Length: 301
Image 1: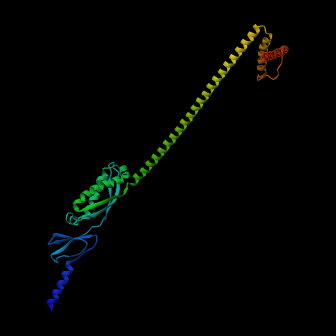
Image 2: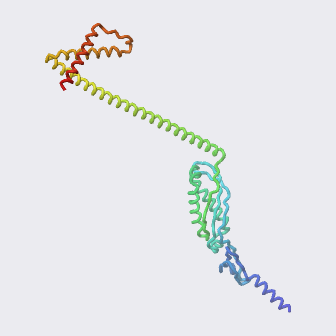
Image 3: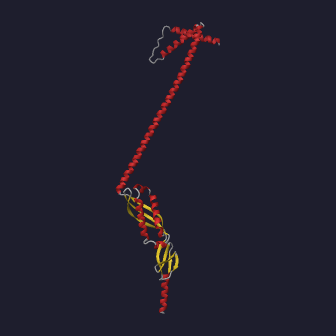
């Protein structure tokens, strides 16, 4: 009876020690006498009790590793505080278990070291403006370094880059000065453009005025030329009439000049009263002569 109880107890203990259940997203390594033997994937498994044992329980899901804040000196001697997060996934549980001791601590130190190396080779302005490029460079280096450990680093993100307080104030003043400088430049350029446009407008106006005056002078000269030609023709005709013995032609010529002279006197600005000389009656007679000339001309037609 006692032997039976002992056998049952051993069977129960054997089942308890030999049956293993691996949950989804995990893998177990099995060791026999301290040496790796196999890997248990998610599900129900049976191992040899006492001889075999579970070496390591490895989480195969993507995980987040916090990188503690650390101070980094930039290439231009600015001390900044930087922290980050690292996303990684174990793709080979055997390597992650037996190729490195304390995987998480090793990865943390590896990321911190490369952050100091990469950011220490940059100026502060480059750090603050090229964060995506920094993440990509650190990810490439860390992922390559963790490949032998059976780990795939999927993403590294720099969370904060914090310069010293006095440096932040100086950067704020610099930014304010830069914005003020740009505003003054834009204002000066606007004033310059306005003055240029105004000068161009005045230039165009002067050109148009000069062209107008030139055209007016040309037309005036042309009119005087036509008038001179007409007067010359009239003088020729009158001279011809005189030569033929027509006295009315003389009266017409004298009356025209006399009337022109009286017209100029009458249109003078300071001329308020027009005094006609006694010889005005002869002018009237000349006008009558003109009427007779016109009458003769119409009669001939």
